[in-house]
Structure formats: C-alpha cells, structure tokens
Image (cartoon, rainbow, N blue to C red; front, top):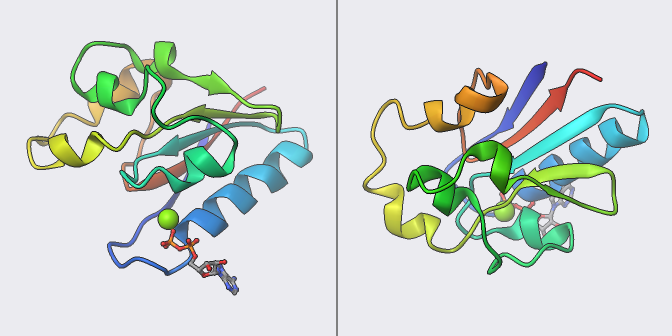
Length: 122
Ligand SMILES: Nc1ncnc2c1ncn2[C@@H]1O[C@H](COP(=O)(O)OP(=O)(O)O)[C@@H](O)[C@H]1O
Ligand SMILES: [Mg+2]
C-alpha cells in the first residue's frame, strides 16, 4: 500500500483538485484507490457525488462509533472514499495524538493529514 497525502492549512491551494485528480488517475490505471477526506469542508466528498451529510463518515470513526472499514463508500468513479462531514470541525480540537490509529487499525495507514489518497494493493 502506498499513501499520498496532500496537506496544507491554507485554503485555495489546490488540495481538493490535486487529491481528486490523483485518485482518478490511479483508478484509471487500474489501481485500487481509497480517498480519505479529512477536510471538514468535505469538498472532495462532494466532488465525487457523495452526500457529505450522510452517515457514517469520518466523524463516526473519530468518535469511536464506527470502524474505518464500515465508513468506506464506493463511487461510480471506481474510487473508494472515507467521507468527511462538517461535524469533523467540531471534534478537530478534541483530537489527540494517537487518534489517527483509528484509521491505521483497518488499513495500516502510515500517514495522517487533511486529505489523503491511499493506494491499496490489488
Ligand atoms: N493546477 C491548477 N491550476 C490552476 N488552477 C487550479 C489548479 N489546482 C486547483 N486550481 C483552482 O484553484 C482553486 C482552489 O483549488 P482547491 O483544490 O479547491 O483548493 P483547496 O482544496 O486547497 O482549498 C479552484 O478554483 C481550483 O479550480
Ligand atoms: Mg479543498
């Protein structure tokens, strides 16, 4: 598995565009792609035609209510997504070092950032 992370605090710097484009390019090449949308604005989630209000999302994962595996949604673009939710903003302050393990428990993610593209082995 390879992890690619596009992460910078400043808005309008191309995170969403680059993340979705990279995910689409890898999917087109036949790779299995999991896009982890850690941005509370949920732009990448919306971009891929998913409803960011729907549950479960990364909000439930970080609240410990759902496993990361259970929150994965499939898209018609061949990209699997761990969707964001606006409520991520509410828990961002409460996140503690180690909470990223809630993702690594299922997929052995090695990185953590605002938006990830994870390529999984076929
Ligand atoms: N490589 C690029 N060249 C030109 N414009 C871009 C490029 N990447 C993104 N943009 C534009 O920049 C703006 C911000 O991009 P976005 O991906 O939404 O940034 P972020 O997610 O960091 O807020 C959008 O209008 C987008 O279309
Ligand atoms: Mg964005």
